Image (tube, rainbow, N blue to C red):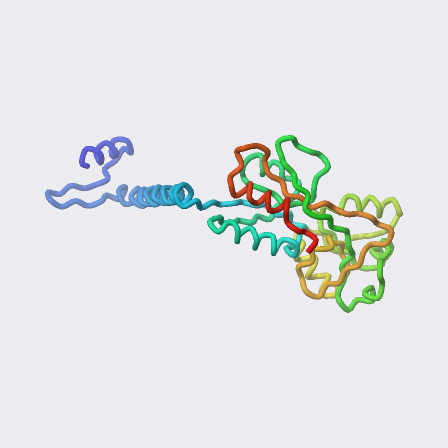
Length: 261
């Protein structure tokens, strides 16, 4: 022990322990590095525990990215079923921007992503289509628009409009608005879906949403007249045999799940 401490002192360039006969005490440097070594020891213990839980007990950690423009309504039963079938798996859900989903999967930052299916394919990524979601106009529950079956694009120019910058419908919708020469000026632009929905529910204006993506009470939705925009929601994972059992189980359940319920 003494030789090990002396060697460490040589490497660090200073005394760690004051030796006073039978009594010893830490120097100032000793106190400083002691806290750091304690953290290293705890980290080592934690690593061993995690390895044991994974290898001996079968525990897994599954990191799933969810697009920030998707609501939870369609996924509650799905994840409940997954957890029921995979009781040793801990699921961590991350809110993500769809644009970075492929890189996050390929780099291993995420094990899977749930977002709108993208037109450009990657041969390294396996995509499983889940369900289709139409574009809808959202407004406050007591708004006059509740009497309508469909809402025309021109209505968006008559009301305060709230613009969700990360919405996967946004580019196509804005192109249609420009083509029709409609003068729509967003009152608020943000990447926070929950903020936009809260403002709409309070009666401040309109926004567009996926038909299953409302998360705030007090919102009604109607389809856009003569607008056939929809998005296909999909689960993406890395192709190949390197996927963990938890990832394989997630993809299998997604493929066989009844998304129409």
